[in-house]
Image 1 (cartoon, rainbow, N blue to C red):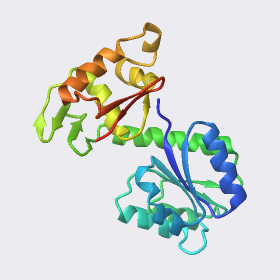
Image 2: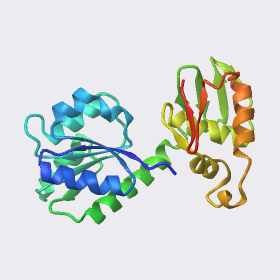
Image 3: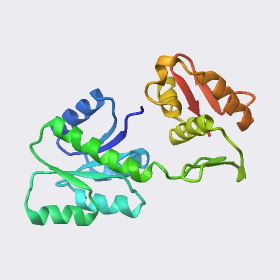
Length: 225
């Protein structure tokens, strides 16, 4: 399945590059910045699944950045990187809205384990959240799909395909990920008819010119809405 997108804010070039390179090698997409101000200016946090913030940032520190992100509606996990391990430091971080912390120096494998644990927790909380794009709205909890506020009936497979495409609007989703979302992780071995279901989904969207669900040759599909 699609790996998470991570916001990383760390002022140490060596630390930032090491963490970003390691996580990228693990398949994550990483938006790395050396300051809180740069991260806010880039607005990259709006498309991330988890944030990793150094506490002792120059200028706006990690606690202040956490409060800023929370004030702008950021509701994903925030993992602190800190060289301080006192009870007061932990309380300050958690009180600001941080979810967990890793004490420096740390093993990159431990960091990855913490990230995965937080993502699993976040996924259980956000997996049923409604998703809205320009014309479409999908509500997993109620199993409802709307085009411009008009409900359109989708089959179970079409619904799961559309949900994943909408969760990744303007991002290419591999055929493998779509198959796993619609039929399960072992389904690729049986070669399910993904193209047929995508074609049926396009018909229900009125996508006659194939400009809404784009075919990305040799890779998969992309929703553009």
